[in-house]
Each structure stands twice: as C-alpha cells, then as structure tokens.
Amino acid sequence: TQPKLPQPAEPVEIHQLAEDFNQLLAAQNNRLQRERQFISDASHELRTPIATIRGNLKLIERRGDQHPEVIPESLGFIDQESLRMQHLIENLLHLSRADRADVDLQPLDVAKLARGVVAHYQPLVSQPLSLEAPETPVMALGDSDMLHQILTALLDNAHKYSPADQPIVVRLITTAQTVTLQVADQGAGIPAEDRTYIFERFYRVDASRSNQIEGSGLGLAIVSQLVKLNHGQIAVTENQPRGSVFAVTLQAPPKS
Ligand code: ADP
Image (cartoon, rainbow, N blue to C red; front, side):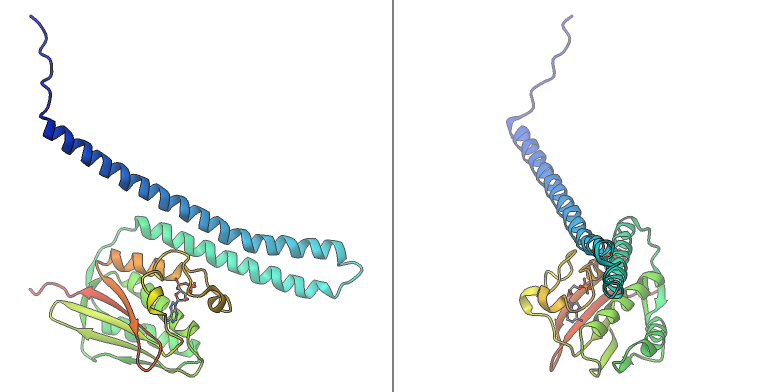
C-alpha cells in the first residue's frame, strides 16, 4: 500500500502560521537588536575611563621624571576613573543578576522597612530627610532586600540631584489593593519629555547637566527591573513647587 501523504493544511491556517512566525521573528530580532545596543553602550561607557587611565599613565611615564608635579594630579584622575569603572561594573552585575533573580514575595511591613532605611540614610546626607508613614504596620507583598535596594537607589538620586538644603520626603500611601512608596525631592526635576526614557539603561537627562554629577545611567534601569520582579510599578511625576516624585506601587497581600 502507498504511504499516506500528509494532507495539505487549509490555506487560512498557513497564513496564520506564517503571520505568527513573522511576529516571533520580529520579536527575536528586536531583542537581539536591544542586546547589541546594550553591549555597545556598555563598551562605550567602559572605554572612556580606560582611555583616561591609560592617557594619565603615559603622561606619568613620559613626563614624571622631569616634571614630578604632574604625578599627583594624574594619580587623582586614575583613582577617580578606576572608581567610576568599578561602580559601572558593579551596576552591570546588578543588572544581569536582576535578570535571573528568583523572588519569593512575602507580606512585609513597608513602614518598618522605610523607617529603617531612612534612619540609616539620614546621617549620610546633608538634605533634611523625613518619613510620612503610619506607626502601625503597612503590609505589602515584596522581597525585603530588593525593596531596601529600590528605596536606597531612589534616595541616592534624590540626594544627588537636589541642592544640599532642600528636603527629601519618603511617603507611604495605601489603598485597599496597593501600597505606594514615594520619594519626593525638591531638585531640578526631570523635563516631561525625558520622563519615559530615564528608566532605560544608560539614559541620562541632559548629558552636560548630569555629567557634573557622578553616575552611569544604570541606577533607574536596575530599580525598574527590581520593581517588576516585585510585581510592582514605578512612575515619576513633577513635585510641587519643584523637583520629582518617584512612586513605587506594590500589591497589598491578599486579605485572609
Ligand atoms: P545616574 O544617576 O547614574 O545617571 P539613573 O539611572 O539613576 O542614573 O538616573 C538616570 C537619569 O535620570 C540621571 O542621569 C538624571 O539625569 C535623572 N534623574 C534620576 N533621578 C533624578 C532626580 N531625583 N532628580 C532629577 N533627575 C533625576
């Protein structure tokens, strides 16, 4: 007997299959494109400090004997740029770890967590720092270490991007289903057109302004990934009369 030949599928199905396949291919290409861009951005960011370090080493090599006065300044640059590289690499590692992190969301008291972080952070910064949260527990689902990291990173930015005497407020706002953790500063603020991009890797608002301030543009990309792992959302709005408000919204634990 003749082997049974496979029956041709309905033309409609083939169309559908082709369309699905094209969509899959487009998504894959998109991901590859983003990865390529990421590697290229990361290499570029690392190349700049390496060039400065090598340039200063050469300077010391060529002129150090005859002009020893160039040495302290060059060593200063080398120190500063190697520190920048170290931070950058640490942040890249954070990013790649967050990509694969396993999270065990547990009900936890966010008010207590925020009190701890604020108490620890206040002595480290010049800005007056206050917490507006109930004394009673405010429960949300989250990973305690990650929430620490998120709040600290937002406080780091509030501190970095606002004048030394402008207050920073950490606030907790609850609804029946959510708990929102806000960090409000009275700094320069973020122009509306930049707000959607600041969570992207390496994005810094107005390079000339940000370049005066140490940073890699990775902090908020890490925060945003951590927030996602906690099944939360992050948003940034304008503060009144000036500055920014970063708001992380977490899920409240299910009522038992
Ligand atoms: P970094 O601070 O290392 O540059 P981030 O990813 O933490 O990177 O932030 C991205 C950019 O968003 C910063 O370069 C800065 O331009 C802007 N930004 C972040 N937080 C604030 C803030 N609180 N106030 C004003 N600008 C901010």
